[in-house]
Amino acid sequence: MKSAALFVATCLTLAVTTVAGPLPYVLCVSACNAGWVSCYAGAGLVAGTVTAGLGAPAAAMMCNAAQAACMTACGGTLLAPDPSWACTVM
Image 1 (tube, rainbow, N blue to C red):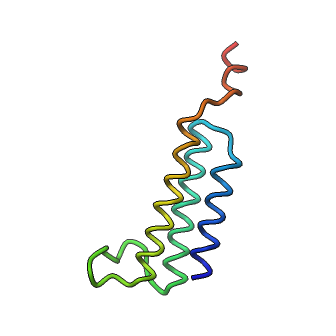
Image 2: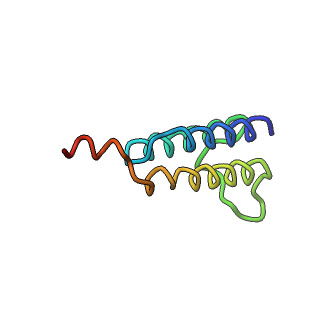
């Protein structure tokens, strides 16, 4: 439970503090995936071996929900304009 909360807080912090563009997006998504794997490991599960069916452990569903929220937060880093690109084009 603590690892899921820490995971979400870290992802939201990364999503807010990065500059927009492809590289920050990739870094943010990578952090989401690393957090998802550690969330599973903290719950005693192996990432990629649990399906989201009726028999899925609650911890796996929480980790999946946290990863979805993290990935959604990363979306803004790709879509927002990056002012530093204007400097490199000129």
